[in-house]
Amino acid sequence: MSQSDIQVRRVYDPLLRALHWGIALGTLALVATSQLAEAFEDGPWETTVWNLHILSGYGLTATLLARMLWGLAGPASARWRDLWHPAAWKDALTNLRLPSAHRVGHDPIASLAYLFAYGVMALMVVTGLGLAASEFQAGPLAPWLGDAGWLEDVMEDPHEFGFALMLGFIGLHMAALVYHQLRGERVAQSMVTGKQYLDAQPIDAGRGVQHD
Image (cartoon, rainbow, N blue to C red; front, side, top):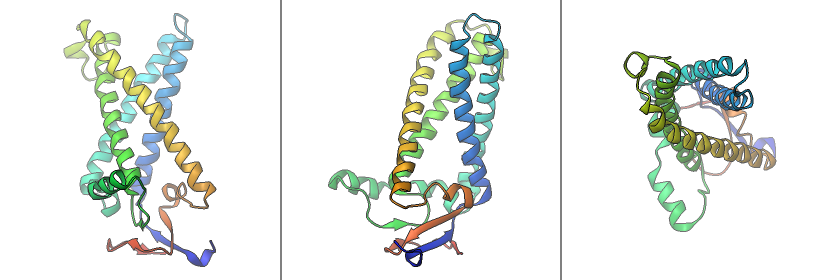
């Protein structure tokens, strides 16, 4: 496809992009520190690495809360309604095909994956804060749950299940980005530049975004 066939539009605002990368880095930090803690189990660095894991969890919690609030107060492409496409989901499931038309803003199918990921992250945050309080006597819940030894048994399995789901989401997300890149679709650049690169097919506009 030639450059003349590409429509470039400013869509994603700077704060949305910053929150996106903050969530991504926070998630990767949690994955890395959890694996390092397992590698250093019973060693002199184990406590230090778990403390880094807990701090990464605080960072993800703050960034996720900010994203939720921005979904209520931000511009059109940051709003939760830009991720909500039940008609497109039903059509894709009924006809077993992806939407053919591009739209300004979040892709309908990718949006479903993002909503799923946000839900899993919320589960990870809640169970992580509970584990930090009961196992390490750390975090905002420690004054109430610091002596609740039983809480570790309740929270550990959901936390590990959420961890496995997040690993699956990360793998699918990266695979989708590579797929689009190989097709010449500059999807990954959108969260760097804030611009969407759409082909000349009919698109769902009418959202007041700025043309480049």
